[in-house]
Image 1 (spheres, helix red, strand yellow):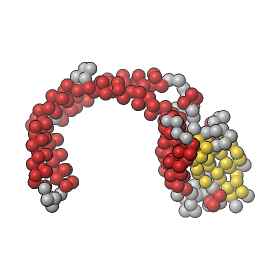
Image 2: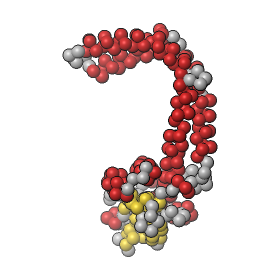
Image 3: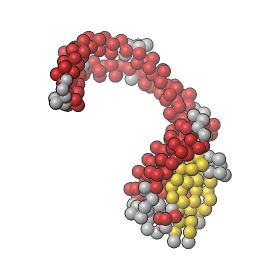
Image 4: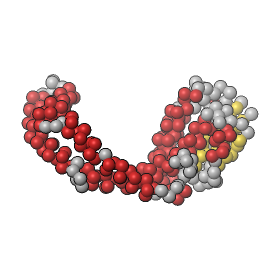
Length: 259
C-alpha cells in the first residue's frame, strides 16, 4: 500500500511562545531565594560543628577517595596524608563560609540572581520543544500521539509549524506501547540540542552534521522488526530529525508505511 501517514512536526520559534518568560524567571528567583533559610537550617542540622564536619565530610570523603586511587598506588600514603591535612585545615573555613554564603544577601542569593537568566534561556528551549502544554503544544507531545497511533488527538494539535503530508491512516508505530516513552525521550533530547543550536545561530549544515546525523542514528535503532508494529512495513517507516522545506523549520518527521 505504501506510505499511509507522513508528518513533519516543527520546532516552535521563540517569538511564538507565550510572552511570560520574565515572569517565570522572576518567580523562579523568588521561590529559590525563599528556600534559603530551610537549606541552611538543614545543613546546620547535618553538620552543626567542626566535629561533625570531620566525621560526616572529611572521613567519608577520604574513604571514598582512598577507594578511588587504591592502596596499591605507589604514592598512596603521601596522597592521603596531604588530603587529610588539607581537609582539617578547611573545616573551620567550611563552617564560616557556609554560614556567610547563606546569610541574607550572601553568595547563595547572589548566585540565584546570576543564574536566573540562564534559567530563562533553558525554559525558552524547553517550551520550543515541548510547549507549555496549556497555551501551546510543541513537537514532543504531538510526536507521542503520532507514535501511539492517536490520529485525531495528534491532528487536533497541528498548527502552521507542522506539515501534514499524508494522512490516509495512522497505526501505532510500535508493537508495544512501552517502547514509546524511550523514543519520545530520545526525540526530546536531540531536539533540545537543535533548539539551542537555532538560538545560537548555527547554520543548517552544522545542525545537520553535528546534531541531526547523530540523533538520526540513535532514532534509527528503534525502527526495527522486533519493535515496529508488524502491520507496518519497517523498511519504509522512519523517525528522523530534519528541516522541512515547506515550513522552513527543523523538527521530527515520522513516516508510516504498509506493504
